[in-house]
Length: 557
Image (tube, rainbow, N blue to C red):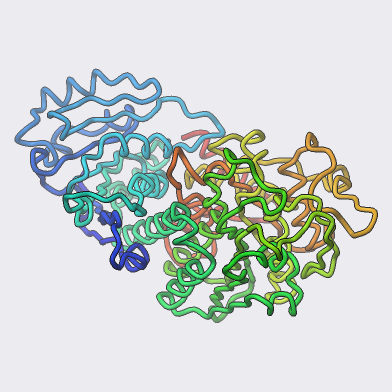
């Protein structure tokens, strides 16, 4: 059962980029394709898997993590005692060796990896020292499981202590023990390469490291408060990624936004002490035939503007840059792993502040699309900046596939809940692909109605092309908010447009999740040179048969 002992360390250039003279949790994640020998008394371990997968391995496969503290008899007894409802854990040795079972049930709208449960288990069992997390899973679930572990180790912290932080120099070994699926077993028996199917290559491990760096980067940005993550700070994060990847960057700021017609971004951010910006990272490899743009809402803080939020609604609005943060992490991962098509990351950055220059209700702005918008709610600002972003992606970047991602509406949580982002798109094929990618990545999505002829009339204005907030709040708010953005491409846009509202999945409790990184690199995995991402990416064909077959395989497994 043991696989290749190749490993890679997580790079820390992004993780520690703002750590000078500050306290920062910086536990390194080390990904391994085989189990290393450790004594749980000095190197704690948690072993996680579905009961059916844990039952497929023998004690000899796992004993290097447990001996001399845990005997085979104790291990088998613990395994037999697991009755997950929805999860279950059993201590094998003090609190230093733990066996954990993932939920048995997994509905058709959930991730087969049970990624959410993995994060919860790791958070509850970690002891804050050098330790190991062993994941027992099928090959299909490796990527989502690795990203789930990464979410359990947030980077941002400003806690002070009289003692040096234990986690500042710790290493967490994330080790995989692969078990065959029924499909993999049949293929392996036919081809005689069963052992190869249960191995992770050095390239696979590098992909996991890259993705988890992206997830933790996105989560760190979202966790940081506005006094440490304003537009200036966010632009520095963008520049750091550009320098690391060697890609080109463009920044349009302040009054230049107004002059160049970005009325949405400029109008939202003009009252803040730190001026708004549009930033673009561009990866343009030779031979590319597609141009893809990912557009992120980067409201570094949202007071609501003059339509100000109540005192209980404003805390947590540092997270309103979650879409842009997720796209930055995804861009880093996608490009680092070799993206074969033109890829642009567009960041619409502003602070929605209150001040003498703040946009007023009744003001009319001209957006980049040339369309006029009457402001009837300054707290509906995200759609304004994204409207500029998608229009720029279409007109200036000539993108034929445009995805925007945003913490856009509170109604998203009512519509699709706190685990599933809301998905709106003009393409049924890409809707199916995105749902499949969400299950394979652990960043879940659920579709909402795309019906502009029934919804866009909510924005009717007597004096402008549209208002920025709906007349009837009970008419599919997340869909309407997305429609506002799509209208600045035009509902006759011949390309692919995808909108992801992830207002609630962006955080759990008081911590960011890095949502969107795993989703985007999986959804666009077909365009990657990386073997692992390519194997996960939905194969898009015009007749939709590949997606349909992939969905059937997912259900069978």
